[in-house]
Image (tube, rainbow, N blue to C red; front, side, top):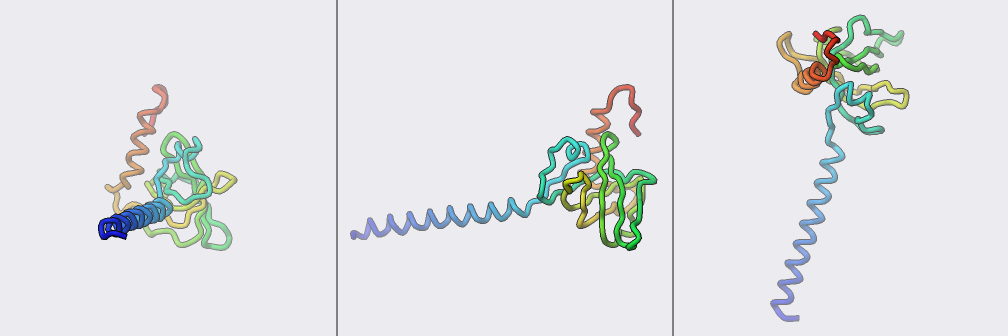
Length: 150
């Protein structure tokens, strides 16, 4: 083999190796990426089945129910347009309250109940997670003209 041909083979192998490494990195990144969906998107079937995602909205007042085991809670999230029931086993954040905005990480169960692995509450009374604020603004924009939305 000539030196020029050897160089071309080495360069070709490097290009193939870099391409393969890039493909593997992008695949791993995509598998660990967690998208945000509003409650309306989730009800409409836009959320992935069998895959983790984030859901956000306001906790519906008087929807919080505690199970007898003391750790499992059920509550309802809304974007003022649609609602989704959420089940969470664990200790809720100290700032978790009905009527406030939250973001939960988890999966949608076959029964339509979102099974949360983590619940994140807002930090103070002036803060709302950006995804939740955007989903609420979109719900207000899509509300029928005769429906009053807070």
